[in-house]
Length: 192
Image 1 (cartoon, rainbow, N blue to C red):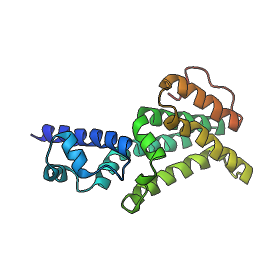
Image 2: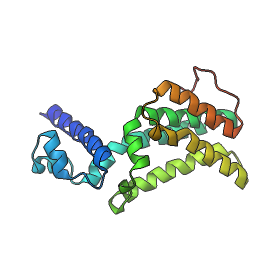
Image 3: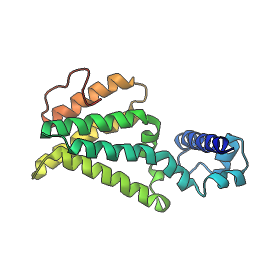
């Protein structure tokens, strides 16, 4: 019985991602999700108390992975390695969770009162990545370049869903690295 509940919970999350993407987070209702999963609305509430809780369950794993990736990159011995690992790691996590990240980056209705903690975490992850990319004691120009590099590495993921992940990864690393003045990375990047 426990496994079946876990399967239903996972199915709810998958259906919610599809509906949030197709209709926006705000427009998709708990009733829509329950009907699409094939359960009653009270059964849905047995698994999730709110639509915000579903969104949190959907987005938490990639955000946790991004945080872990960034902290692992921070331990690298040189600034160039930190930068490469931040960029490659964030790109990899975002490509692995492409549909979820597209929802986060492209649906403004995700950002509301019931999702304030989620929004705060996303902001913290972005700020930490940009800080590491900027390096120690950066002036405002290096901070600008770091923010540009992070955006260049991550924003196109949601804008180019039809580009194969491997091809997109290589181009994102190349472009973001160029902004930071990093030497081109070999096709098989050790950060992967």
